[in-house]
Image (cartoon, rainbow, N blue to C red; front, side):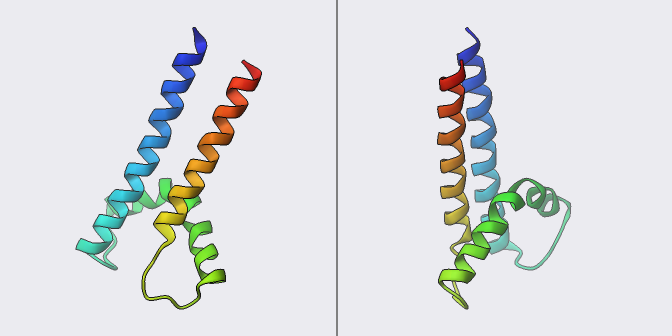
Length: 92
């Protein structure tokens, strides 16, 4: 009975992170370079995934005009999701 609750809670968390990345991307198109409280709050949640993604992009594709870091961040979130679910099902 505990597994469905944990699964739903984790899915909710990961869906929130994915939506936060999409919202940050859209806000960067609407108001690029302008910081406000909403974007600062989004950076708090998306930063742990976006910052490594930006480093990956700079390492493999330096000085690219298009920012692919949200795509890399979504891939990182997907990998983390799969690992966590594998661990949850392994130990419960």
